[in-house]
Length: 381
Image 1 (spheres, rainbow, N blue to C red):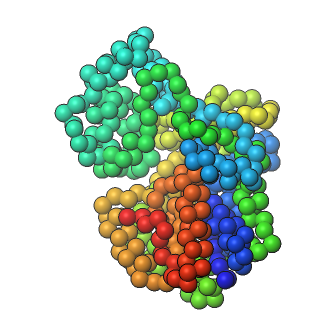
Image 2 (cartoon, rainbow, N blue to C red):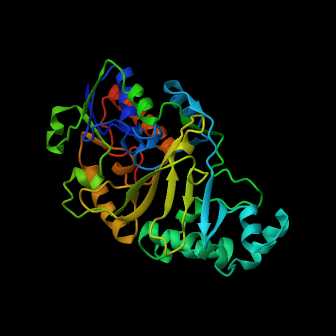
Image 3 (cartoon, rainbow, N blue to C red):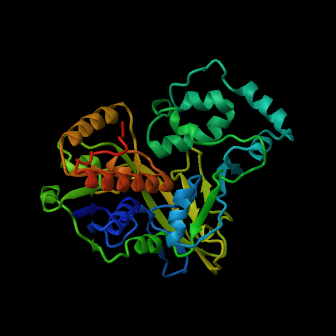
């Protein structure tokens, strides 16, 4: 079968490779001049630092199958992601842990004492948090919420935290020990050559044709037996019902000598600081040595046409519009929507790869059975 993958990011690369190995003829197109999507990494010409072009991507997973898959194509070096937060002129460890609590409150509490201390400050009357703010207040109380989360969230999402779903905060841990490893998964690491090199190797198969700087018009879908679309779900329909809401990022690059901030990510949750964080990219590859450093200040804003969409908003209006687009997608044939944009969900890299493997497996099963492939293997609603 002739299969088209629109998008040369993780979804397109993994599905394409799986189907090519199964004997299908695969074409992959991408409007950008590089593979990797938003995972794209490149070697900075001025500093020699390996830069994450669209913001940092840290690989972490508990899925042994996904870990085996990526390490088939790339060597991963151990990497421990550490984040700091500058609040009112002082630096704290993130996520909130025993060190953060003791430093913030000027105390020397043991774990059980800190747990009781935070529980006493938490607003326990909130038994079923309805939004981000209520979730935070019920978990950590007002002092920590206002110091570390309120301002950062307002800048990141462009709206009051009480308008955001509680689930956003549920992803962030609260620890009553001194573990400041940002993630807690079994497998964590960074690709030695960067994500772009890894994804290029995934796409390196004789049955895969890769075409960069190539835009695909959904009206041309009939030229292929099946299309996998990892572009925006609403983009497939020409945005004819309106655009799904996203936040985008602007990056302000600057260089320095030596080590600018001593860590990969420094958050700035104070409301009077216009950016959300500074990322220092040499720290994402600690096995390398560089005399100079390259950093990026990140500014979040509403995504406009022509911008790169990063974070799906998924508030009430977006969910209603999403339901309309999903219903239309499910009445069509010959296209399956995949990935972060195609399913309008925030997805970590390991989940993206797992879903791509699931999608490829489903396609092979439907091809053998002679049945139609669904529009969504992982429905977004």
